[in-house]
Length: 185
Image 1: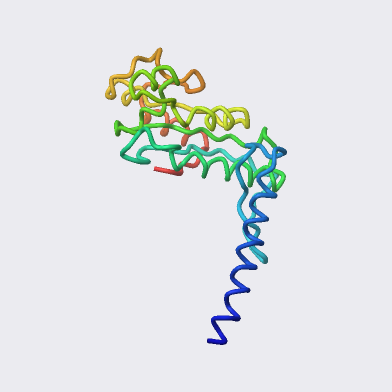
Image 2 (image 1 turned 135 degrees about the horizontal axis):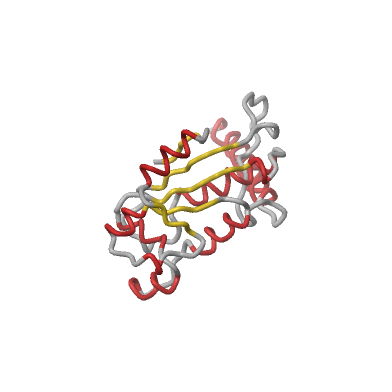
């Protein structure tokens, strides 16, 4: 019984510190307001390097079966990553992050403008605000044209913050040949 009583205050204290750190780091002074940064890890060796150019091609191919979910799970991760780079001094001009929406799964419909999404699903596109905030932080967004056609989305119905490319395959290859590292799916 005594070890349980001892462990409880320690865990509660740790949880409170973590929650306080996350909320303090999610202030409006970050690159993407309202989203946290990676929690500091004492003694961590590999940290963001403000002298590097972060050239990242981030694929979002399948997030969820239901496109009307609250927010695609990859977008908050990208916001947290951008905020972490910013916190460690990587300037906006060294953060070259391109997000490519691809594949023809139902969650691809998050590329739709709010009006087109609302017409199709009867509710607002829950991803619009975060995509806009990420774009303001310097993140570029693209959509695979083959998936746009495959999902029967009219190009004019794509969110204006998202560039439509011919094919994600071509975009990923071109970006990798320009020195981008691919991550995501």
